Length: 156
Image 1 (cartoon, rainbow, N blue to C red):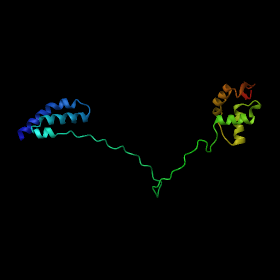
Image 2: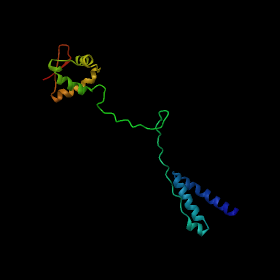
Image 3: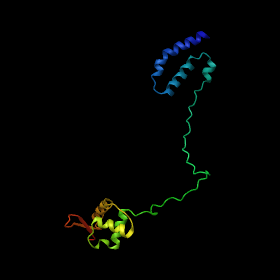
Image 4: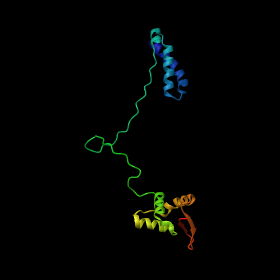
């Protein structure tokens, strides 16, 4: 028995260099299982050998944080895209056009001040710049420079 062990140990140390060249541990195990199967002197063991089937571990789910006393989940209705909040710059420009705000020439600062005073919506000046450009290209508005070298927007 000891001589068989020593012989197997010697053979494995010779093959270790070749087996370790495989980067995947799974491949290394498969090669080692195949070699041990071939070295087996017991024909019954050789005939009944079945390589183990690798089982995939189930994917871990993240647990939702509990809100306190009960773990009962209450389904909330989905939020509507139009529920509350201030309208975007595009909607506000459309609203101002429909109200007739642009019947006279208006600068961007006048537009933001009007929205702040009348609707209590605060917009930055740059919020309207691209929207006004689109409105000009669509033909909804026109623009001209005034004496202060600022653009004024108006209904054409």
